[in-house]
Image (cartoon, rainbow, N blue to C red):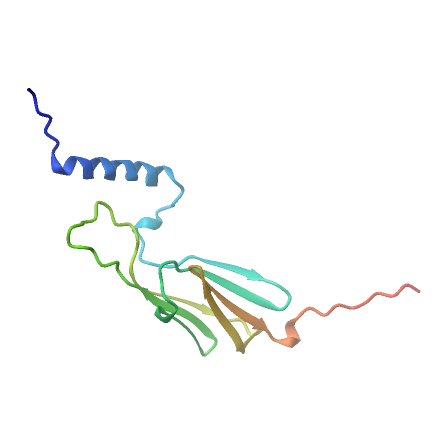
Length: 143
């Protein structure tokens, strides 16, 4: 009878190879080798500007939003998942650690009316515009 021996690292190697092919064929654009930096979308309406930060796996208490001298800073820390002793990572791509992103605010933002809301892994920072810079609608009359 012939016994099939599987090298213990072979499964890990095959899983690693499978994930490498997936990551390399996707459109990540080198994001995997940069420091932890949450991505942000910026939207604007006539009344405000909203910055939406992608920060999944974080608690509200681990995120800090500050404004100082017209600079908005969003910082925080994503803590590492504690490994159980009987398990070890085959691959670990979830970036952890501290991050900080800063944005110089335009004069059109009312820094006293900035709000932040965290829900489902997304942080929305709402920057209200000052009254003077909101577009004014003028009714056109027909003569």
